[in-house]
Length: 421
Ligand code: EPZ
Image (tube, rainbow, N blue to C red; front, side, top):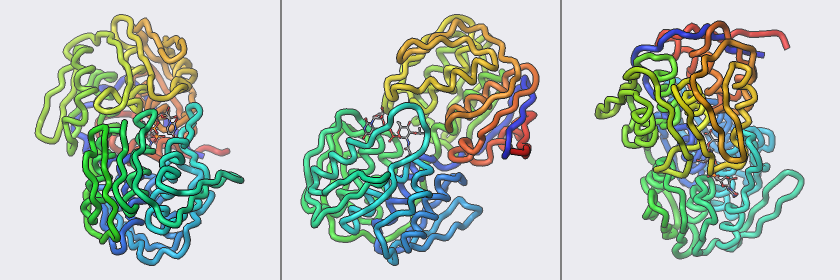
């Protein structure tokens, strides 16, 4: 088993290259199944979920080849022989649900295990199922499997009760070959929804409106292969921007799309940080003591739920009270139990967490409960007095590439150690 060990209170200073967006990569790799040709996907993050999705495609009979130290993946889905995905591989992550839409779209059937991934409350896939059924698919949930099939998918008008990222992308994947036009209303507007639509259109799909709340997909007969570069990861970038603020350092995140960070930039400025914008970079450092501020998560372009834990941790160290409201998930404050071991003064009431601020973290032994809670414990450890040990870091490896080496290059005293079970 591996732990991360941090000796905190080193201000992090320097430049960090941001990798490809995890939540774009885990949609675009399965989307390559729709191509009757070879896809070359560039700027992939070197993370476990991407490796597991490539392994899932190989188990389906497809061919995958990583190049460029894992940052480029060549996918040949023309040789896929089955619609039944590997149960164990798919149960490891949430994004395996995209195999449903991709296989159903291309082959008219799919069998994928119920998704796994970060456990912060009930995470159903009823919007996905309802959308597939609207297009004429039959869906059965049994023995831990999701089984979908359709003689022929036909275009439908689908209204999402909530702008679900996963359902929006999954229904796009299923609709690319459906007969006629599919309209998704109250669609998610995240950059990785747009990225996935752009990838599919590069292959010959006819998708319009991605990035707005109404997406239209006109079905086509076939998609060819092609080459595509994934957008940079706004959540990885945001994690390093918050690292600059919480360690009183000075970090420039490079190879990003600054506009995708507007939500965090605005909040950091409210907190008395300087955020200097370059063409593909942002530089973050404090302008004196941090001020508290209120944060409410929502879908893009609102403040992202995936930066909520990291932001709440930063707000604990600010001068003055702050309120954090989580509107996307019904139970995304589980990380606070572990954060309290480091001294966090956060009080949860339903969907809000309140901090009085002025907290000084002190090192402790903690364990990650999911991907972003792991990143949050790292941030608190970087700011804490003394040594922090973090267990269950396999969560981190699902979504952050080379985390320790990137932080060490910025001056962090951090290492990964192997410990006996
Ligand atoms: C995606 O999860 C991301 N995961 C999450 O990132 C991210 O937090 C989330 O979108 C919101 O941006 C991937 O892309 C692999 P949703 P997803 O469908 O698709 C409810 C990370 O750390 N809902 O937008 O599961 C759901 O319970 C991860 O990178 C239904 O009720 O999120 C939630 O309350 C964590 N029924 C809300 O909608 C459904 O069928 C938003 O979920 C689907 C969702």
